[in-house]
Image (cartoon, rainbow, N blue to C red; front, side):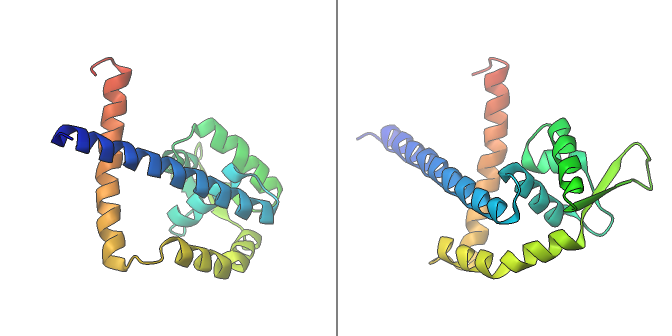
Length: 160
């Protein structure tokens, strides 16, 4: 096989591995969400808030950007999560037009209950990889994500 063919085979294998990982992560997220009585997108929103909140709450646009979803969907789902007492929504001190969202004590407690299971799951998923390997892998994945966004933009404007 020619070098170009081998490269294309490796790229194809990589893409299918990512598809498989994505599918498995979706199932895992659905399972976590089910344990809290919420939907998978709502679980991801809670996880994004948990990740992004530095003590002042998180703007909906930041959540939308993190999850690569439409801000209106975030607004709709966070209102539902607020009604379920999983998060609080308050006007921003900097700009009253913006809403800052934070996890409630109830949400933090429910997520904490899952933490032992989540650590065990992560241990299983990343068995055989040390911190240096994961850092290397994450660095490469960030580059591929950046290049994928560029390729998607090129495709959408007809450059490719």
